[in-house]
Image 1 (cartoon, rainbow, N blue to C red):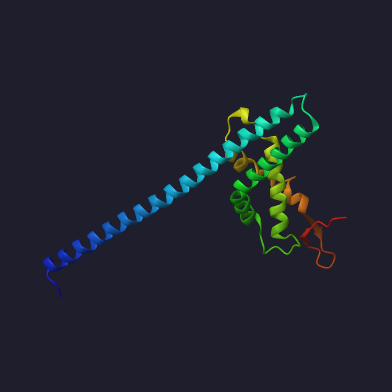
Image 2 (cartoon, one colour):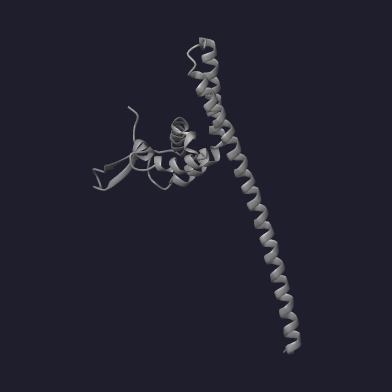
Amino acid sequence: EITQQEHDFALTGYVNEYVKSQEAAKNTIGEITDKVTEKNKKLSDTNETLITELVKNRELLKNENLSPEEKSQIEKEIEQVKNQLTTNNSDLIDKLTNKAFNPTLDTSLRKEDLKGALSLEFAKLINSYKPEKNVPFGAYVAMNLPLRLGKGGIFDTLLETKVNKETGKREIIGKEDV
């Protein structure tokens, strides 16, 4: 048995340790948040720089006085910028692939197929992006790429539902290339 004074002393110690651990957790969370925010800011800044370069090169292509060599060089630069945009945003493509892919479904759809289809849709989003609308590229992609998975999108392209003749049940299967 302990006295009230011993109880109060022990309780104060526990409370102090609890407060210290809470402060340490807040500091750790703050540091992680700062790193994530910094990473996202860097990603956004890189996207902005690349989009500016892309727009500039697209405008240059409109010049009717370009030689075939100049036109070819600008087209190569546009492709390089598009590839850099894809690389810069690969984490988003990977995250969406991992979220959408369900390995428990009994289909021939492979994760790589889904990622490839998402990358293709990402490329289409680069081409349809309108910087004059003042929507950051990353936000545009984050909003629109997931929409391309659903009805009429990637899954409809890669998968189909058929009735199993033996069981009578509907099954999801990978579409076969013909």
